[in-house]
Figure 1 (cartoon, rainbow, N blue to C red):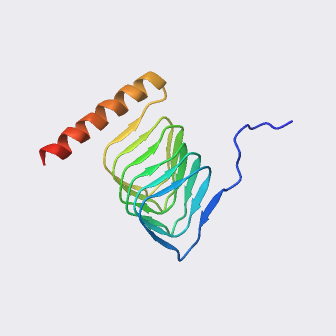
Figure 2 (cartoon, rainbow, N blue to C red):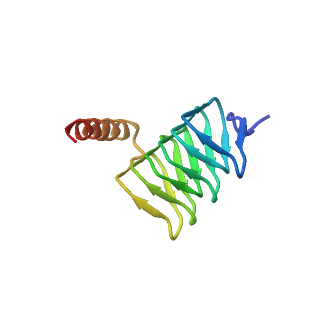
Length: 135
């Protein structure tokens, strides 16, 4: 009998030395060890290796980041930032774990309560939308 219902097998691997220009949408679990110039959206979990660079938003169920993300991170279940990581953008998650020496430059929403999280995320997205239209 399995203890976990989530599939932990990696569906997609973007290897070291790979570079993708454009948005990437993946069904399932993905590990990125290369570079992406565009948004990354996954229906499952995301692991971003310590030598990875993403110039775009990251959206996933949960994420572990070891590299650099120049964009917003939305991981409603959980987000772990390793000591080699940097996020230059806003973060939204219910559970945040940050190691020493992490760089975060942006707003961070981390609320465990589902209703409070959804309300705060919605308000932040509304404020971002208004700000982007005003500039």
